[in-house]
Length: 80
Image (cartoon, rainbow, N blue to C red; front, top):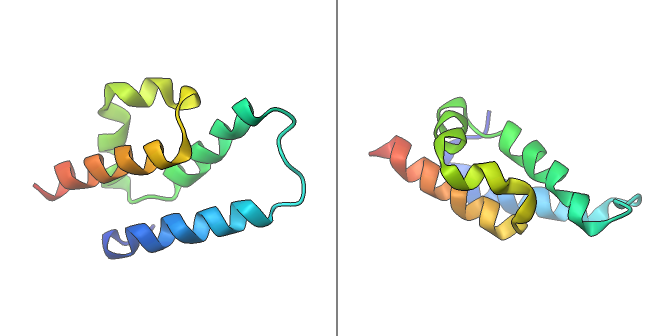
C-alpha cells in the first residue's frame, strides 16, 4: 500500500506512467477506469473513507485532479 507521506509522489508517478501508455482509451470519457486503478493502490484506511464520500459515486464524471482532491480529503479525515 502507498504510504501517506508519499501521497503526492504516488499521484505524480501514476500520471507519468499513464502519459506513457501507448494504447489509449477509445473515448476520453472512459478514463475513469484509471481513476479506480489509482484509488485501488491507496492505503486501505484512505480507501474506506474515500468510498464514503458522496462525490465518489460520480467518479466517472470527474477529472483526475479531482480524484486527487477527494483522496486528500479522505486522508485528512483519516488523520483526524
